[in-house]
Image (cartoon, rainbow, N blue to C red; front, side, top):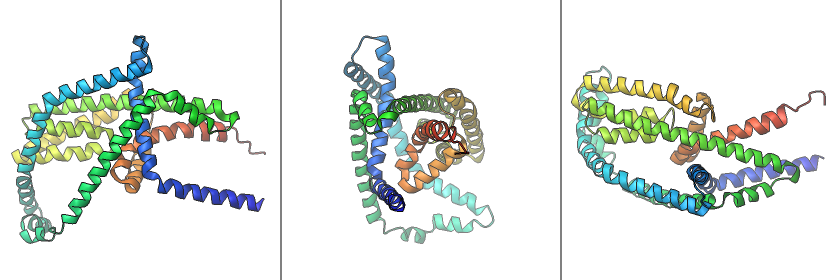
Length: 336
């Protein structure tokens, strides 16, 4: 019995090491699953409305996405590029403005000297190798994204075959339960994706309109960043607020205060009203669980882990509720 227990523990250790070594492959695979579910939502809706096969529905959805992306890029991309260039041009002014404000606060004179003193920048000169590393990382991330998109299309093209493959890898007596878990996980993940997409669109439009009304420069670029970072709850909206605040600071401190109040209202409205309203039927994540998952996966896997932390927690929550709670804990007989 001891030998069998020892072999089981050793197998678990080897499995854990293997998972860690293949973490990037598994991360790409899970990202592909998330994208496949995102594609499956409109595919299922389209097939309910029209008598289309799955390949035809997938082709129609991809074509619609390409047309939407082409139309939006024609409308927004030139303005985004122009505002990005303006942001690059305004960056030295932002640093100077921050240094001026730091000089007025006791104890922050060192920050002013660090921002304005050229010697401080000389310490940052050996950045050539780091920039090359960033460029290599960007190329690697691009390849991973392309591979993720290809895998997602293949999964969305024939999800039943992939489901049967996964079910076949489980014991025969548990296969009906695994099918139920896969269905519930897909429903929860699809609900989360749909809810967060609607929430991001609302945040983008309301932030854009508010910044335009306040006459803050780079309104479109700031709103786009705020909308995209809505997919990273808790951390994302806070980080996204830094861009419009910095731009508003160039206008006046009063304008920065107005932008801060506006973002606080929109951020709290999205976090406590809009998102719960959109997700109350599919996902109910505790903020503490979501934040700890983001911090943990962000520390272990960097930005990709941070972006995929929430969908992973959505799936794990379904597994914990169904397997750990209902199948194990609820059936645990303490007298046995």
